Structures are given as structure tokens and as C-alpha cells.
Length: 134
Image (cartoon, rainbow, N blue to C red; front, top):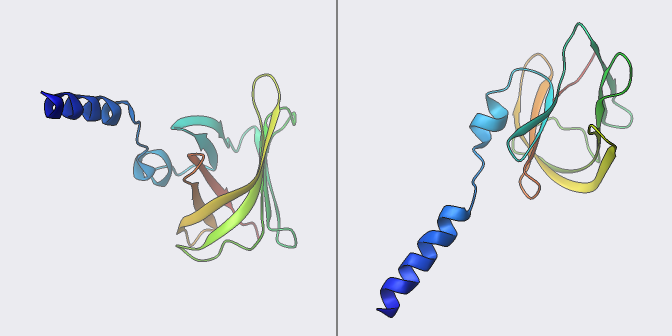
């Protein structure tokens, strides 16, 4: 009886854990974007958004034309190799305020020939797709 109760309890715990498929949430995205816990927070639209990149500060900026919605990722190193782990500060807008998370551990999941970089922070379930500009 105890064994059955323990198994049922463990099944309930595991069923309550929500996993995040990096392939689905992040790597399948082609747009420059910010996601958190599977939810899209910002997506770059070339008609209404701008991009900025500072190689000196390892900083990526994505913002709309009115500067009301944006996200900024400032890395402690240039993200240039797949599998690379780095620290980054992230600032982004919500519908009501601006949020900042400092010292996030991101891993470079993929780097495209066109300058796109897919990075994932496992602890906060944050995915960013940014682009290095020439």
C-alpha cells in the first residue's frame, strides 16, 4: 500500500513539472525575439522595429519605432561559438513596466551564417534570438 501511494505521489509531482522544449520554443524561431517560459514576449517586425548592436559592449538592442517596447541583452563576452556559456544582463518591457535580470547564464545554442544567434537561459527559461550587425 505504501509503495502504491509513493508511486502515485511521484507521478503527480512529475505530471506537474512543465518541461520546455528548446527546439520548439527557441530553435524553431526564425525571427529576432524574446521568449520566457514558452511565451513570446517580443518579436522583431522589420516594418515597425529597429535593431542595434555594439560589438564593444557585446550588446544587442531590439526595439519598436516608438521605443515603447524593447529588449536589450548585454553579454560579458561575444557569443561566437555554439555551446559557449556566458553571463548576460537582460532588460525588457512588459505591458506595465520594464524588467531587468542581471547575471543570467545563457548558452549559445546555434549561430547562423547571417549573424543570428540563438541563446537559452535554462534557469529562467528565457530564449533570445539576436543578430550581430556588420
